[in-house]
Image 1 (cartoon, rainbow, N blue to C red):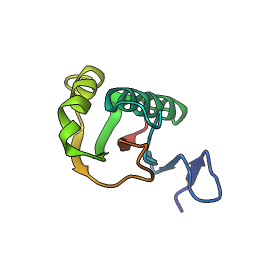
Image 2: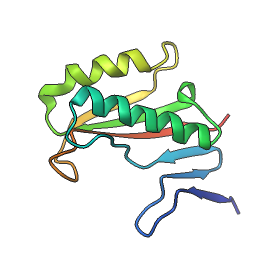
Image 3: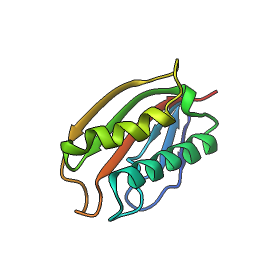
Length: 116
């Protein structure tokens, strides 16, 4: 039977779950009320932090889902993403528009990655 490791487990969810060398991160958000640029930077910093805690890094990301509260901010989010994502290691990615948990959140990023 494969072991499941949970990181940052609370009553509703875990920040990350590792199974068979694959890391599943919960949706990452940051800086409620801040600009899309600041929220994207903050969420990606959380992705970096969690991946490091799980024994990985952004070069090992397999797929990413990005949710924007308003698709008109797509270019603003992409400007931050393009600076952050390592060229030659870009993951499969989808971006969509959705109402997020509160109107203060403009960006949520969900990542699946491989352990080193």
